[in-house]
Length: 109
Length: 113
Image (cartoon, rainbow over all chains, first blue to last red; front, side, top):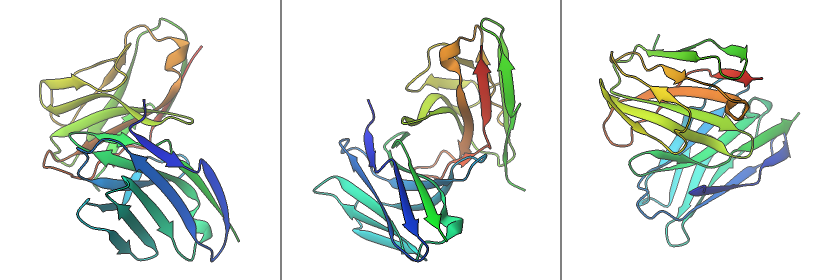
């Protein structure tokens, strides 16, 4: 049973567009929510993370929005670039990481 | 260069033939973990270790063994592999302090025929 539900499974966006990936969780013990980015043939790498006492965190073109009451959080990729084409995983952490199923993002030039 | 190294990267083998996937990290991390990645399921934790000689089960430990005799190494052992263990495996490590980012290896693709 997946503790973090992630959607969509895949998305295609034009260069310069906005990619949005949504995640929902049930475990209120989660106290840290990282996003990982994975390129083909590579392991996941930490992209950005947020704590539940913060509603938004921005790093460059990547923004996490967090809604604690709804137990939902999302990743926004602004001005999407072909180099952003990858699989993205959200996760929740209590004493260990629980990952969402992943979203494959394809950015068309 | 800080890294997590897994070997082999690819392996095709047959049911029942014992195999070991090695994992080594050079960052002096206390915490190490093994995951399997399957389509539509994301990454699921198999086993983890908080330090030398301290290991515990993750979410999907059946059919796997691990050991942690040295801080830098955390091998994954499949004593009698079966086709349902065909998957992409990742080793990860981090410091033990709360909410430390995990550093992943580049993966091992196992095919069990």
